Image 1 (cartoon, helix red, strand yellow):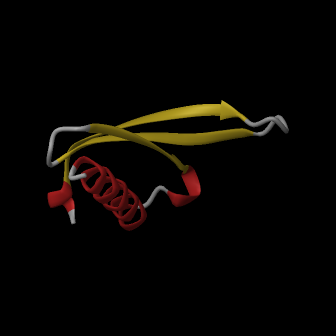
Image 2: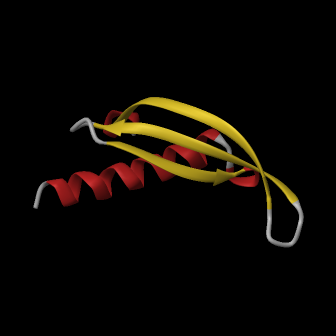
Length: 69
């Protein structure tokens, strides 16, 4: 449902967990239909096109619902 968001930008980050493990995190930013920018952090294990699309769609729907209030 990419019509709910557009202009996706992805930044790969390497972080160290509190336990000392090195982890890759992806910061995925996009804009809603209304032009509101939002960012999600996605773990490497969840960084697949279907999962990221689902997360972006859900977040964009929440933002648009709040804006409609």
